[in-house]
Image (cartoon, rainbow, N blue to C red; front, side, top):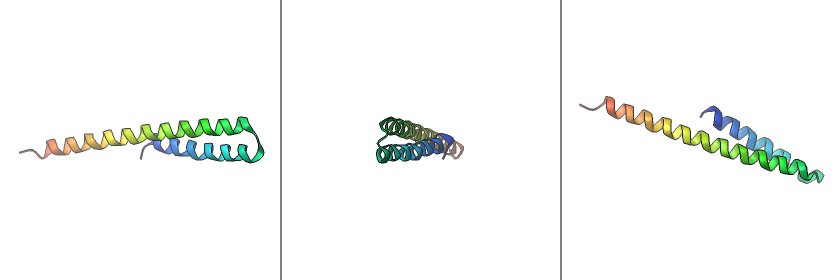
Length: 69
């Protein structure tokens, strides 16, 4: 897990809290900020997952190259 995934998860959770707080209090701008932060978090988390996949495939390629006769 890399820092993008961690930061993305934090943004997603905090955004969800803001969105729910805005809904409970009737604060539409807070709801919108929460939704925006959630979207940012989901995007950053997706970027982190993609980076992890690329790093993993690079490791596999190196291992396969090292084990060739």
